[in-house]
Length: 66
Image (tube, rainbow, N blue to C red; front, side, top):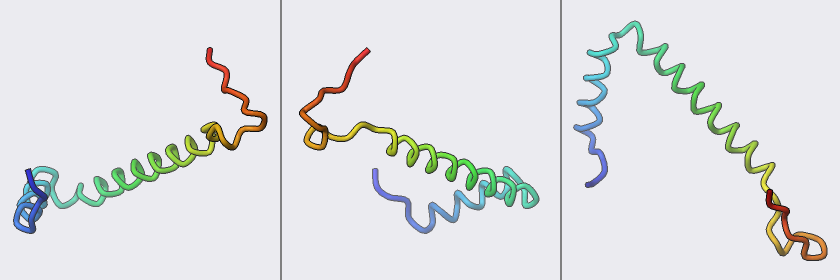
């Protein structure tokens, strides 16, 4: 399977416009944007909470499991 070409993207956009209608498209875009922003902030927050790699731990301490 390859990447989507220009014609495929145009067809998808037309189908979405037909299904959701012109009035609901801005709302749909807004909801998708907010969802992506929440996802990115959650990923960034998770990265900040992860333990440091072993070589950065003082005295070679191992993480406690359970």
